[in-house]
Length: 454
Image (cartoon, rainbow, N blue to C red; front, side):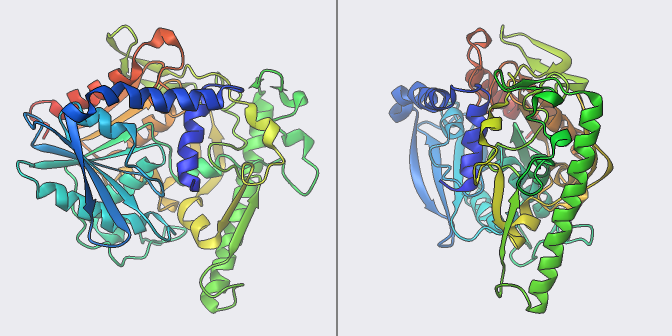
């Protein structure tokens, strides 16, 4: 399993709390598949599609009988993973949509390597009978990719190779990308910032720094429950140290990149880059994991909430996730609480600038230079002008992230909606929240079907 695929599934099961990971993964994936299996043969069929290169391929889910939904086709992609069995495909196909699931195989330095395959997929969908509009969809780690693609397709390579970028993208293959007609981002992280926010400032040498250790009882962490209650003073120390460490790591990577450019690197094209204390997958040192009440707990403004009783309301969106402090047990585990990457991949995917104002609060993330990262979802959202939907799952920690992305969108027609009690993989985190999978994709269907939108 590649790293970004593992990130997706780790984030999916993390919402269920310690001790339930494997059970939740089985229940979340198999239940979704089983709910569609009975109607699969009658509802839709699939066709393999080669997208013009050895690296890019697609699987088209097509309803057996096309009807009113035929004019709108969908495309879904996620970096490094096999998307062909992803539940979004079945959910949208049974609702009458043609949806192309796009994979890329090969070296994946940065998000730009996926763009030609996505472009070929958009063009392929437009060639199908009756298709008038193509909407691209991202979920989890696929959302930063989709936002990147939408911005570059609309504005050309100059949108990602400016001097403000820590690692400007190569422009080859990024001219004339097929423009989407709409964008859907489901439970989106913020791109490079997601990795930066996992940095553990207590990691310095072999001994942990006691006054920066978020997993220490003296600083407010309860190992027995995985819950924490951090003081404002500790949070200030933590985020100040995290900013310092981030600057040191980014500057070291840039120095190594300069050596590579001079021909003085350890290897000709790239070199290993290991970061102790930067979490892999969904792991890491994030105060909002064990302390969901004080960090990323609610949005700043009211938004549309899809309630478990079927009603809707415009309210402050509040996260109902449980505390996620289980990573305390993995502090010394290689490739969980460390990042094993390369100089170029780090700079392309995980590097972002922060400043002295950096902090995560109950309803905001401050002090981040969103424009400094090619993979920054908020920065790329500023280049999206087509109709856009941002959906968040309230039994996860992306409600505030979703609001930040929504606020950065340039689209005049943009929607933020939250699904009450849904986990990162759309299933309910507690029975009282009902069928959150149905609620999620019924709303996507309603949004796509709104008269005059497309």
